[in-house]
Amino acid sequence: MIQKPTGLMRYAKVFSIVLLILAGCKGGNKGELTGVPHRDKWYQADPYGMVYIPAGSFTMGPSDQDIAYTLTSQGKTVTVPAFYMDNTEITNNEYRQFVYWVRDSLAHRLLGGEHLVDEGEYGEHINWRAKIKWDDEQNVETLAELFLPETERFYRRKEIDTRKLNFEYYWIDLVSAAQKANREQGLKDRSVFIKKDVINVYPDTLSWMADYVYSYHEPLTQMYFWHPAYDDYPVVGVTWKQARAFCIWRTQLLNSYLAESDDAFVQYFRLPSEAEWEYAARGGLELSPYPWGGPYIRNSRGCFLGNFKPMRGNYMDDGGVYTVKATSYWPNDYGLYCMAGNVAEWTSNAYDESAYSFTHDVSTNYEYEAKETDSPALKRKVIRGGSWKDVGWYLQTSTRSYEYQDTAKCYVGFRCVMSFLGRDKSDY
Image 1 (cartoon, rainbow, N blue to C red):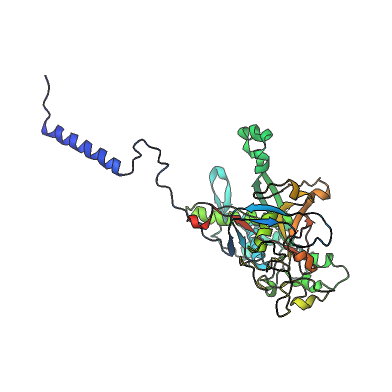
Image 2 (image 1 turned 45 degrees about the horizontal axis):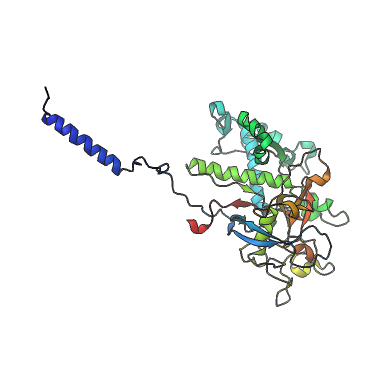
């Protein structure tokens, strides 16, 4: 016997049909490929202190006669994706934030208690909201090991022992992980590609005297890094490894903040590749020998356009004996200051005389992670831009030079870059 639908059954059927219709109106994929729903919209804000460098192609290499006959570069068309770059060299005060962070992290761990947060299986991490009371009687004895012992103090000045400012940092060796021979190992244990290093972060303030033995540079050694008068001057005396550590710290500083806000991470800060540096230095001016164009190193009024060693050594003729403020002189067309002169700048690339011959023409790059046991030739890193102590030839956008990754010089600094997420700003 067939049962006739009751009024309640009719209502239940109608209600089910309405639910199905509503479900379809709420974005069901109807069996189609629609992607994962409810993804957050993304817009990349300009990182503080950085300028946007649009993607493009340029002729990388000499824009003038190779008067030194170095034969280390050749004309080559190179394409560079979009990225951000610091508009100035990293200054003493910016680098000091890194030094103080390392100092404070050591203090927090010594104090313990409310200064640390236990995350169970993830261990303890620093509670940065806890205030360090350096002069508190209960803390003085605990924090004493961070300061110079009394036998090493000058006129009993209580100062931080900078030899203890060691920073432990990590990075992933993606170059090794991408090699075919290592792919299988990566499937078994990815930790083999996580690299660790510990480095002292304090700049080598003695580099002013070590680089110039028969010169009176004691005032710069004593004051250059820490005195407020030099806050806006470029940091020097920083090795290539210290510069890389700074980039990694800066990345974690920003991404930790973004994680607290449940925002997506950004690309990491890093040292620029040689190609990125030259492309940015040219400021969109094809084949220009200098960041301001060319071919002259003076403007129409006869004033020098950068901080270097003019003529036969009249250092003051360009406005500065040594370094000058990081925003000195006129920026190039991308808004970058002192891409020529002031201090030479570390890049991420290893130095090889023939690198232009074997590197790719898209995102040109050559890196080598030198070991302590490697020969000095393998520890060379490319520096660009020339410095306050260099003659004009080193200020050219295409001039290549190098220093060793474990040496600190009073004429070498750095600036950071960050790859742009996407094709171009117009995508947003």
